[in-house]
Amino acid sequence: MPDRGPAGDLTEMLEAIGRVDLYVRGMDEAAFAASMIAYDAVLMNLLVVGEAVRRIDVAVLSQEPAIEWAKIIGLRNRIAHGYEDIEPAVIWATILRDLPALREAVSRLLARHPPPRS
Image (cartoon, rainbow, N blue to C red; front, side, top):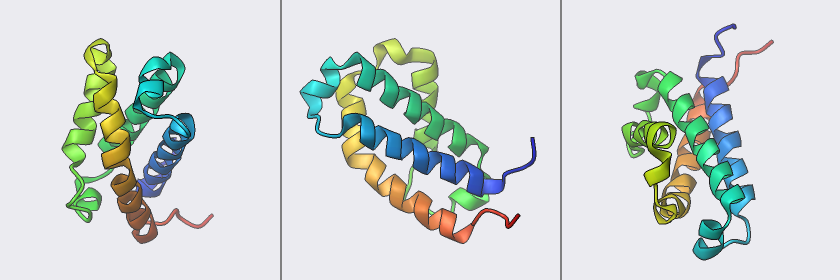
């Protein structure tokens, strides 16, 4: 597989965040916690985000120091290896509190590291 550079991973992150938004649209926390389908779909996309972060060079990530990149990877690890103990309230808080800022930071990084021209 050719090296996509950071642009490929950043784009993948934005797409995963967009899917999370789609899956929880119109829901409140109780509806989210009650929907196994939405919950599982969100966890999968948060795992995708964490995987993408793991692949991006720290020099790129450091351009957005307000984002706690290690915690994103930690959440990915938690989802991959301990998902049965994750509380829906924690994931809901992550969606509301953290994903908007992450989307903005990733968009800024993508503007600084655009995909290579074909």
